[in-house]
Amino acid sequence: MFTIYVYVLDTLADWELGHVTAELHSGRFFKKGAPKISLKTVSCSKEPIQTMGGLTVVPDCLIDEIAVSESSVLLLPGANMWNEAKYGTIIEKAQELLAAGGVVCAICGATAALAGAGLLDNRPHTSNGPGFLEMFAPSYKGTGFYVDQPSVADDNLITAAGTGGLLWAKQILARLDVFAPDTLEAWYDYFTTGAPQYFYALMQTLPSGNEG
Figure 1 (spheres, rainbow, N blue to C red):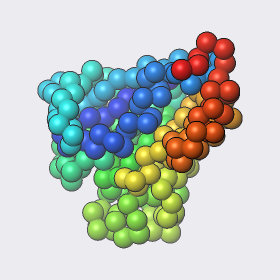
Figure 2 (cartoon, rainbow, N blue to C red):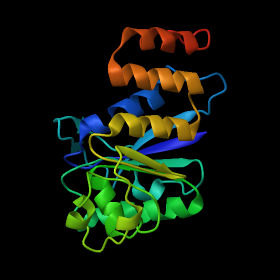
Figure 3 (cartoon, rainbow, N blue to C red):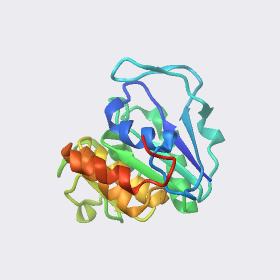
Figure 4 (cartoon, rainbow, N blue to C red):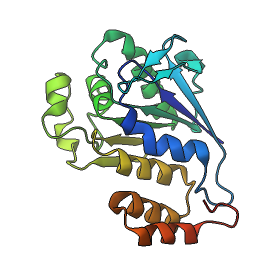
């Protein structure tokens, strides 16, 4: 079983998490025998946070409650608050998870927080375009590992630009191996293009009982 920890903080960018959390929580397109998933919101306190879209989220657990193991996955969304020192605690936990073989997935502003901690200095990654990390994380030394793509998966680290949420979701789903390969491709093609043939292709890949 995988435990998905979704870090929540004020001004969280709602749209960046939408595809991946919806699929992981619902399991609607999971293959037969897919690993079980537990999804929890986590923060530095149990106080409610307000997303950029005005939604109120009450965290399920605290950072100290994150299990540091290979079966833990940490999702770090973008937000306008990542430059505040109090968010360093979750980045320290991200570093522990990476070292333990857990999966860390960061998008948009969260990539700058990882960069500022030196976690992107020696492995392929991406962010909101060339120069973004240098601007917001002056100590960043990973320019030679920067890949100018919407999302980049490097083993147990998956990073994305703020506009790369769909590919980011695909790479996370692939890493967790919860979709059959043909389901994942049809799902991605459908949500990328909106073309109806990919929707029907997606439905045809599903195990009996998962349709709809």
